[in-house]
Image 1 (cartoon, rainbow, N blue to C red):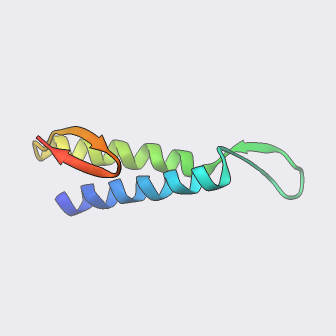
Image 2 (image 1 turned 180 degrees about the horizontal axis):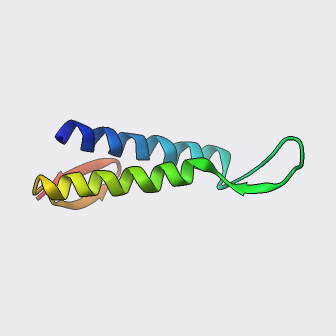
Length: 72
């Protein structure tokens, strides 16, 4: 379970990096319509899952700072 929580947190961070690089809005090639970047949903869902797993394991994330997690 811990591994799944950490993998979800890694997935969320990877999605965040993609959003920073590509922006929050994407446009389709054919129509030029604007859409929210799909990585936003991935980041949100992955962070939510990781927090649920950590809570179930009674792991409290007191601080996240500069990419380092401190467990309290």
